[in-house]
Length: 556
Image (cartoon, rainbow, N blue to C red; front, side):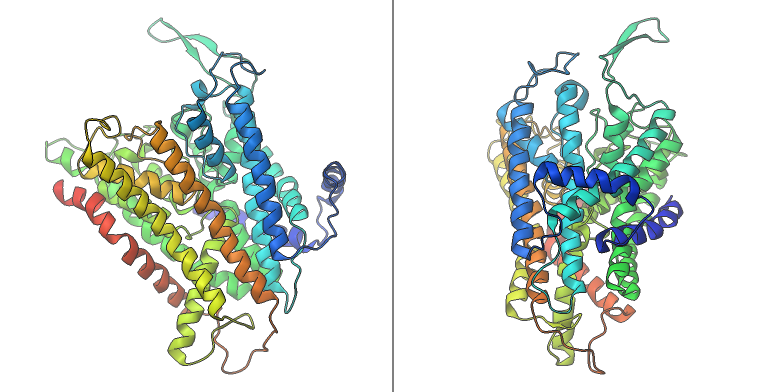
C-alpha cells in the first residue's frame, strides 16, 4: 500500500506544484471554464493579490458562513427534502458539534450516520468535506508562496487557491475513487432503505444513499467521517480488500504529495525530501510496533489458553485481519483523517498508545495542507535552537527569525497539549467527583476508561475524529467541550504559521554564505525530529502513563 502511495504521490506533488504556480497542465482545457464560472458567480478577481492577513480573513469569514448554513440544515432535516427514511433533526448541541467537526476537517461523529442524518444532511456534510480540505490546501499554498518569495507583502489569492484545489485536485481524484467503490458494490443512490431477506429467512432493512461519493472525499480530504456508524468497517463503505487498499492509500496521498509540491514550488527538492524523511521516520516508528502488537494478540486472552493465530481479532473485520487493521489505524491517526476499518477501542494497549501518539504529535504527514503547517512550527523551533547552539542568528530560507516569530511558534506548539490535557483533566475531575451522575460516559472506569477520555480530546485537538467508542460521547458536555476544542485546534494552528510566514516574507532576504545553517540536510532533519519527540514526550508521557501504559502492565 505504501508503495502505491509513493508511486502516485510524487507525480501528484509535481502536478499540485504546477497548479499553485499557475503553470500549464493538460487538464486546463477542462477546468479553466469551470473555475471562471465560480469566480464570476462569487464576484472574485483571482488576479488580485492578498497579504497574509487577508488570506486569514477570507478563510475565517467563509467558514463562519458555512457554519450557519450547516446548523440550519442539521437542525431542520426532519421536514427538509431528501429524507426518504424519515430521520429526525439534530438537537442543538449535537448539531453544533457536528457542524464544527466537519468545517474544521475533524469529522468527529457523536451520531450514527445512517440513522442520524437525512440524505440532505449527508450531502451537506460531504460538501464541507470538500470545503475544509480545499481550505487546508489553499492556506498551505499561501505559506508556500511566503517561503518562495525573497521579499514580498502579497501571497497570491486565497479564493483562487481554494477553487483550484477543489476543482483540479480533490474533485477528479474523488471521482476516480468513487468509481472504484461503485464498481465494487458501494451504494450510490438517493433511494431509501432496501429490504432484503437474510440467510435465516428474515426480512431486514438496509440503509443506502450516496455512499461512494461521500467515502471518496472523506478519505482523500483527510476528513474521515463515515456515511455509516461503523465507518469503513461497514462492508457497504468498504466491501473488499481491494477497496480497503484504495481507501488506505487515499488517506495519506495528498498530505505526502503536498510535501513534494513544496519542493517543486520552491525549487528546493532537497528540503522537501528532508521534511518527507523526518515525517516518514516518525510514521514508521509508530506503524511497526502497532502491527507487531496487534499480530501478537491480546495478552489477557493468551492467559486463558486461547490461541490467537490471526492476531488480536477483537473489534476487527475478518476480511481485513489484524495487520491491515493496525496499518489503517496508523495511517488514519498520523494524518487528521480519523476513518477506521476496525474499532480502536478494542486494540491492544501498545497499539492504543501509538495511535494516540500519532495524533498528539500531529505532524507526521498530518492533514491535507495543515499537516505541513504543524511541521512548519517545529522547523522554526529547530532553526532557533540550532542557531543558539552554534552562536548564530537563526535564519530560515534567508530570513531572520526574531522574538515575535518565536513567541507565536511557542504558543502554537503548546496549544495542542494544553487543549488535550486540560480537557482530559476536566472530564476526569467530573467523573471522579460524581461517578453515578456520569456513569453513562464510561463502561470501564479503570485505566482504559481514562484512555477513552484522553483519546476523545486528543482526536478533537488533532482534528482527527476517530474515537475509543466505548465512551458515551453524545451528551451536552462532550458535544460542547470537544466542539470548542476543535475550533481552537483548527484555526489557531493555521493563524500562527501563516502569520510567521507572512512576517518572514516581508523581511529583507539575506543571501546564503558559508556560515548559513543548512536546513535541507539530514543533520537538521534529525534536529527537528528531536524537537518533535522532546515536546511530545515532555507534554504527554504522564497522561500516557495513566492510560495505555498502565493498562499494558496490568494485562501482563
